Length: 458
Image (tube, rainbow, N blue to C red; front, side, top):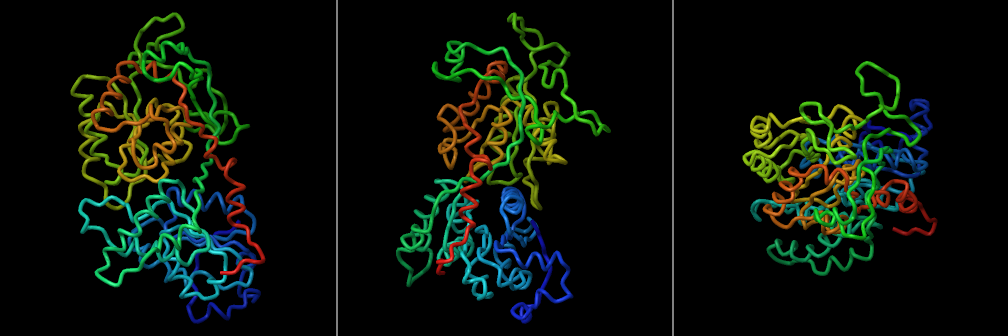
């Protein structure tokens, strides 16, 4: 499929002859596409979704803006796309994320107003956490409400996202000093549906581990007696039929390492083996794979780790995730304070490197104050990590109660116990079916979403 980004003047977009020799065959082909993908913040999960749709749904063309300066994207992207998207009689469906003010775009481009307009919510601004209520910028949430009113279909990546948005519209509109609109949620709800974000999981291979019996797992408080044991995920390959990527620098070959994730302690001794002998047990490897922003509450995460360090508990740490212009100061402070525990720090150079770290880790932690789906947590679980999540936001919708904590004290106690017995979590089978969130499971729903019916009336 095709992704383009090039400017057109507002006064010329309606009269462009897209078969004119001026246009290259690639551009002419793009103008014959029927599905228009528009992304104002092309990064993270927004980028993943656009890429998946473009590669797997026929007749898609995309127009995007880089994932920078989110606030300006939300304010002005419609004006940019008014000029960047050329006119075409072939368009039938317009798909956009809720970062874009869809109402502005279709007002500026009346030719797009007649399309089937699909709005996808990765997050919503009505419940985005702010430190003080007066800090909330009314315009961002207002834009999303307007976009819903002009859309034909509104899809959310989780039930939590949808219900938190719809239930907050009435109170949000009370910020208007007078002449407030009423019952907007009743106008929007019939258009809404939940369509979980589709993740293109890597193929993860595993080898048999020494498993605890169900009674032992119950004793450790990790599983119910009825839960079946399963092998720990170890390593990955980008495609199911591919071999494990060689980790040696400078090789382009693929081979399967004989011991892809052999458990060794700092002195090189193997972890507790079949005979029950304990040598040097490799410390618990904790991973935090989230955006480096305040809404992920890195302050709480690092506070827990510093407490573990003060108690003399051993652990290893990988802090991954994307960084943007403003990085909270806590990251620089924690890098110094936790230096002896750090294995990986910062954004990984490739998706393969990122996933390989997840496969090497034992526990993935979320301390988020703002999460509507959580791609990183599910990717980590798919790679074999034991999840620890807040008992709030979207997490109860996806993760069973045993993986949730309600207070910082509960989080600390869980981490403390796992640091003392890392072998237990390495043999634990996480009770989350990640395949139900895969692209393979969701692709037909998305293809149906982007299908056009001749009897469509905007």
